[in-house]
Image (cartoon, rainbow, N blue to C red; front, side, top):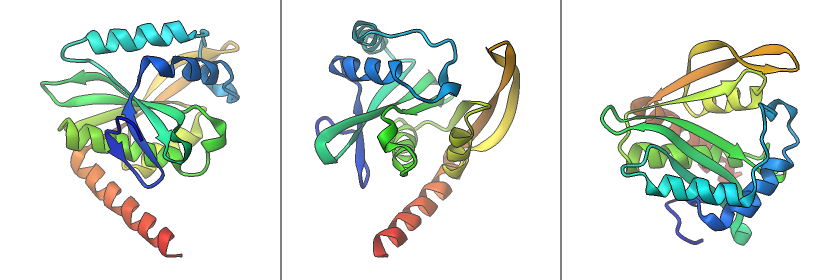
Length: 195
């Protein structure tokens, strides 16, 4: 593990680095989920390098990009973000993407998101988070609710694909609600380890 900020049972989050650009560009270009094709523009490793440079130049930063790495093999598997950080009101939007399909459906996304929430609430002392989910992404909508988020609204006609307008679902999460969800998740992890 290098430069780990928060560590879970199987993975850790670290600051995204320019060296991640090649992997991130490759995963973005080969994403198999068709609902993710939301005006996809191909990114090169140089584009990710520039993005990371721009983020680190902001003081205070309006966003934080973290890379999720599996402990086994120190393998990059995804990226997790805090966007539109409001340092006065202590709020932000979260983003999450398990890039490597081999790690989907096995709880890695849940673990990584819990680590992101720990970083946001415990390290940065944020008070409230929100998350937008494209309506067709039912896996993501289910995941954020397992992490304690609650439905907060719907943005109509947020997105067009093949001439059909789709909605975005909005979820929000207060720190106190997250503590309850985090503790329940930890209990389920402990029970799983005992079996």
